[in-house]
Length: 145
Image (cartoon, helix red, strand yellow):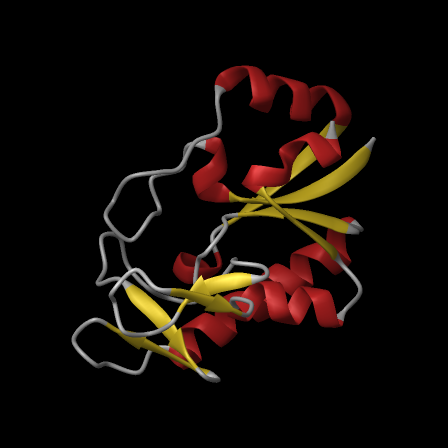
């Protein structure tokens, strides 16, 4: 069975910055589990950030929390761990949380905490793309089913 790296929040893990999750509907998760062995990861917690935590956004190559703290190193550690999981488990595709400073692919928040999206990738999505992993956002789930 093919393995799929997946943002842990999408399977219901309470690792979202607010302490919640972004769980996909149960029927979608069931369909994914029929086709893939899921390999969950939350790059933000894997990188050492707690739950709950301040929201953070990308500003260029950095990730900055709402209060101005530079959390780039934690995001980079988490991205490296996600990359290691892809290698270890042979994941060639990842289903990641859209717009996240870690997992967003194609569009992320601009760092102003105003809800403004700009073209770009989260730290983990960027690293995985560089290694040839296909990134799919949860809004594109049908591509995997």
